[in-house]
Image 1 (cartoon, helix red, strand yellow):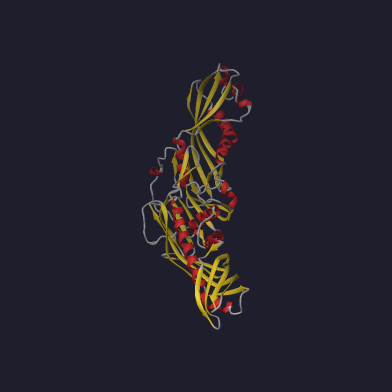
Image 2: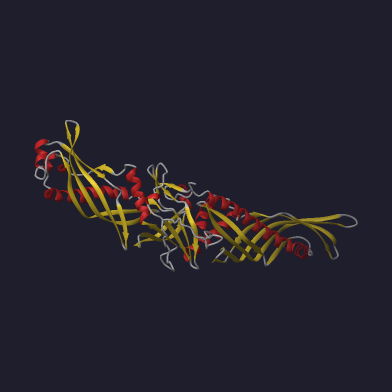
Length: 498
């Protein structure tokens, strides 16, 4: 199964994420656990299997076989030297296929296959007077071909290594149609070349399987260990521990925590403990991707420590960007800075706390809201309100990105400091509610709507995705589609950027 095209390579990225992620020994355990897992269901395995066969066939056709020569004794004619050349398999069809899991790997069987060949024939023999020769073409139909292989993948220092343990190709029979030639030629070719043609087909298929496995092994080991989301944050996609195998699904885990731009992992902020990601049996979708709440906490921590959680509120009405608009709420502000322009600046003071409960995602944000006045081209900080904001979040899927939105639930406010005297916090509470709900939350949603890419193979798209929040995890259950046109879209899928 030679990988001879870009589309085949990208298809294989999913294939081996899907059903060859089985270790040689599934009983090994490790203290290291991942915080993002992928569970591929029986439906997903069947999809991967069908795609593998489709792409493998398209990549090996046409397949050139070796020339064959042989001498045979033909009744009446005598000793005849015959040869077959330009033997080409130009089509293969696998009407039946199956996939089965076992403790030592995955068994893939494609049976009932047919193949069609074109070739040229020639012969020559000598009489006591002259040498007689002829040549022409023939077609061959291969019948009842079975291709069988067993493979496993082991985790080596966070990367995957492919092991082909067993393989076989068997041809049951062939049918030959000879164009032209003498009356004895057909039976002569059958007698002389039937077994040789069958073995040549079998050997050629096995050779391509071996070549394909070598290339796939190289491809697996080239998968990146880190996904650069932007200049601030990257996602650690190192494979963790050994994949888990059941009779209906395959599960694998990646680290799943975010790193800062300096590539220092924030995983030390969290204690590692066993995570049971396999949430359901008989999954109706092809794949389920589970993200523990620590994934989101690590992202929040990276952004916070990179000093990216402060900004000036935009798109607020003019009445709130001039001290005149605050004259009845903060009278002394207007008295000391009459009709001066002003800004509201938000600074998050610690990493947001994110909790995923059943059917809900809650977050607590600790922030300071600073009033700034533009006085004679000088920015003057006037007062600061400390806020504890409670909000609910909803997760969404946009293309292959996990995005979200946030909605204010409740908040408390207190005066942190003031350069203009005491403030009436009762009046400010109502004003803060308007600012948070109408301006702060929309600003947050502008950032959240970009989201981050889920760890999907290059060229694949989520289809009819469903999101469930359960047991401290966000779970994305989805079918998949493969689109070769997406090869030129590295912004959507990332596993081609090894």
